[in-house]
Length: 137
Image (spheres, rainbow, N blue to C red):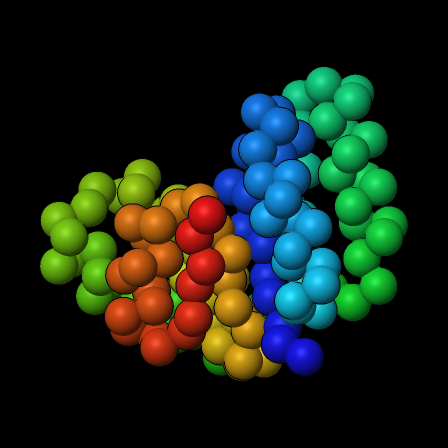
């Protein structure tokens, strides 16, 4: 069975806008879903209400396996952010934001996982650079 990491954009769309219900069900049957420490951190950072905080805490508690970036991923992410950011003409703010996406993508690459994301623009760039599969609903 194939592995998948869900980007925070999928969780946020599902929880806040009721999107991706069919996708979530299909993913559970088609992939072994693993959680990213980076995604969990992003979700926790953005959880402003008690309800959102409870959802994120529950997700973390249910995460039997959590993948996290290793030292080499951080090193490679710095290069990816610089090279892609220079090519795209990004400012510092966009580069900081993109670093988390790069860390998620590098973690997925290490495990041979697909990244499921609603953030096509950033992950198309990462997929082209890293050769990782992405799935965009």
